Length: 350
Image (tube, rainbow, N blue to C red; front, side, top):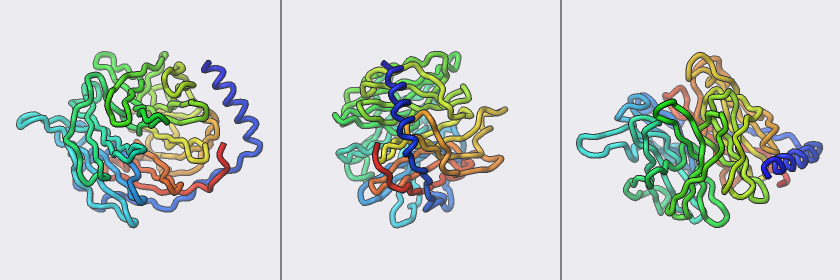
């Protein structure tokens, strides 16, 4: 079934490429979210659109990743300005116990309920999933609650809501013994309840942090960070109930997070570091590109966000607003969060 799906995608896209127009994203805004960062180190941003074009971003920040003082910070964007960041939540368990907080993910359902998912724990191998929600665009939030046992929620990138309201969460685990990475999905109802787990055949690939792309006819694709020098993928032909074994894409990956989405015109977009692994974990993160594809298989670089020889520009998050604008946030040298707004000329849908 999965081979047939892939073959049909290739045939359809081969025919379409003859008529395909060039997509050239145009940068409108490129700024730091924080004028004076309140903490020494920040990382792992997320972004969501609220009502009336307002945006909210979140990230973790503190003395250093993994330190107990690391919490989840938020800021909102309206009328061309980002608000002063505030710590929304942290990993305080009780009067004597505190853990670092990690990898926030903001998500707003079709009904307008806003969720914040994040992780708390000593490290990514032993953390657990947490959730908060808001019915008024983040003005007030519910008390933090731990996700059901065995559920982590979205590990880095945004969930995907199906037509029936169910929510798919792209997620992954890192083992405590042999440091084995595996991707899987989790699913809840539209209100964030009734959780279940969906397995994915990882084969021999070491992958984490999937993104979900949508296609016609109930088809979905995952794009993931890996230790295998490539962005890796898995396909579903039944709205995420079952998945193909993980395979490598043509996109390089230096063991660094990516994010991707399907645009309103049907094209696919990914933000990624165009390199393979170097001598240390940060190598390969100095360049950050935007690539676009019609079929999710053949990708073409379309914009350059960062093009240096050193530094870390990583962990992007990307969404498309109701007005068609593309909004991207990412880590800038662990000192700030960069925000970019781009426009892509409207094209005929697939």
